[in-house]
Image (cartoon, rainbow, N blue to C red; front, side, top):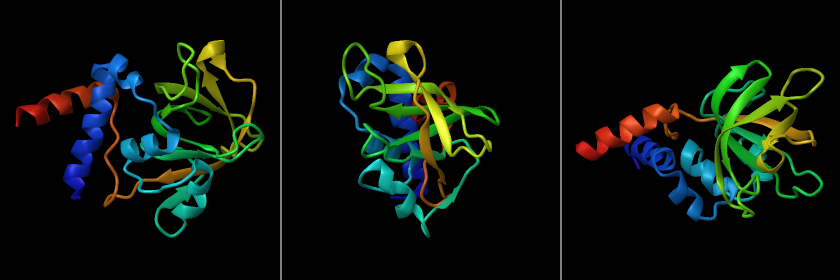
Length: 177
């Protein structure tokens, strides 16, 4: 698939969430397939395995970037880890992510959440430990999760992440062509 088609696909998927959030929540999503589709990062399997799979295929690091995928390591009750795409950078210790299957929403798992707060709680400020917004408590969760870091999309393989308002405009423009 060409880069242009991947960008259009990613934009269309995210625009669908921006335009019709009720329809988006009707589908059950796991975090890894959802992150793959919205970021364009072509990794598979459990989220905890993405960090090792990315070695040699994608740049990795410990600084958030728009469109990068944050990888949380397996941890206690989160045995397969978690992945989420960075949708906004708020400060050097706070980001927003778009992800799936984190919070219970209306009593159901598998829901998509947009622009959810994630805070770096590591002592060194290196994003090796984070707390994530949890909808049922209407605040940051109580657990600090170990993070492997960020996987950065490559120019050849990634859908270009954009702010949600821009996604709706792009989807409308694409539909008109």
